[in-house]
Length: 395
Image 1 (cartoon, rainbow, N blue to C red):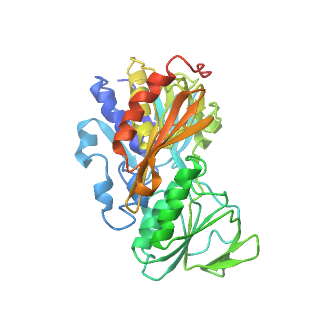
Image 2: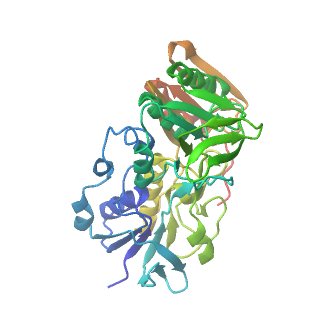
Image 3: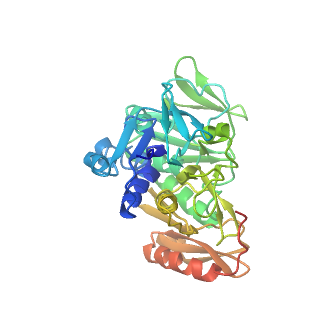
């Protein structure tokens, strides 16, 4: 019998790869190694419904527990991989055991970006990435407590919205001139800043953090201008970094993620990567990208499974993302980076509008705010508008 297919990482990509491999008729046993004690689960609700206590950890699981046994997939939870040995076609787990593979999928995801500041290791300082993180954070959320959120991206603003709804006093600090500055236009940033302000969230932009204060526990956040904001709880939400160390140490190409081709294949034979950790060529956008989204975790895992099963399919998606904050749903289709014009459709004051981003007249992306029809139309229109116009990214 040939060695199993090994998947490093027990997240959304792993669960999808198992399902897709079996749908494609691949019967080889599958072995999955995960750092956490949980079966693959949904991460987006961590900063939304799970943080607010509106759902439980078991309801986050992507598949029923018997799914893995039925699919011939052996879940090795809480058993991290310590090394990949490409020459010997095996992985080594942290306990020193060696596990041969016939094909290997790297789906190690990402981790919170650390802040190189004093005080980040104090009690009361939290991140949101795993179930255990949110359980610890949520246990401290009590009405009237003072929460300082460092970072006004998706997770920071979602957590701020939920914490404010739970009755906390919330301040959000953002180093950039506006919230969500890397992903949306100024009009969308202004809309969200106003919505948070109406709910009582205080947002300070161009606010650079000097340190988190406290002896054993966080008591405040000091800015570079010398001012200090009192805090009972601090959430650090300044983005993430891909978990590429295993791949890099094994000698695989790494550049803002594990480098793969348009079929999720690395340069090493029978080694693939998918999800948040993978850097792939987008022919639609004419450059390499690494996407942090459920869409990418699922669809790239399908592509990796197809390649592993010997039926490779080109992966060139229109990315899409979403964020829920208070009564607002932001849906993004496409990538707006590099746009040279933008157009607001609808009236922001109405609470339902969209923003189109174009380059040389071609539609790159659309932000839809409480406008689901606009979002779905954009996902269909973008590939038609971009088809044949962008240069193929280098593999």
